[in-house]
Length: 348
Image 1 (tube, rainbow, N blue to C red):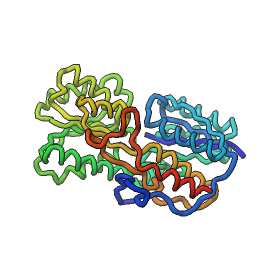
Image 2: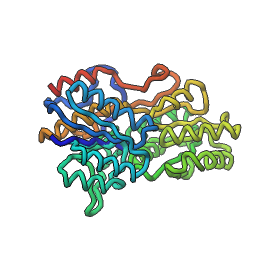
Image 3: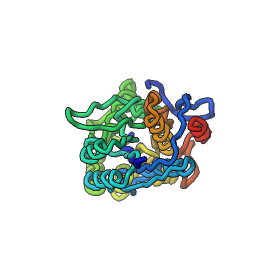
């Protein structure tokens, strides 16, 4: 059988907060027998971003148990390397390609090659499929067979609720955002929706940046914003690598005591900021290990020609982490691990 290339990108009306017990499992219940001897290629958005790598690690672990050959390639954080990785997967005879946090619009060359070779390409973390708004490709463009992601709008609303509680309803919030990622835009919509009923909260005009500015100008932009808006007491950052740059810049500018920063992803570096009381106070985290299990589950259903589980995010759990509910140092946040047994039982 040809190899499979799996790819997942960077973020149901119900809120899938935390899997506190096995009975809270929001994933599929219909069995889906796992095929044997698959060649799977997983392409991460960028190997230095832990959120891109964690689902790939889970898929690799699952593959070993299922007897699959799983190859993980680094997308390098740019479209050229991501397309090249997909072409490598096609030429090496993958059965499926899974892209992690890779925008389908940026890998049309790779998607076309996979389609020509009859190789399905699946995704995670893009926020372009249910339970998020389904993004239809432009005319003539290709997209993924499915995308596994949390309900970003619900996560945004839960983040807003945490900020309102923490501020006693008096948050003056500087909201930073990045239009490059559908997941960020979906989360932003939920955040603003959750804040609109806070009568004594104030929300800044949105402060936009791009991923390429995270390591260059974002820190300066953030310091300039805080200095120009001295009443700001909370900052929202759309993903943890950006938040890390903002924390460093604010500290160097001696503005660390002025604001509390809230971010998204649950990267270990950012969780350490929270533990140390270093500007960041909360992080909206989702279970990236669960994402890997859900990608595998939906892939099995796709290959078996079974209906995909609805919503396609399979109830991916999330929570808002703060100083009182942190995972152990050096550990990612994960929901109740009993979901692993639930998935394996479905695949027998």
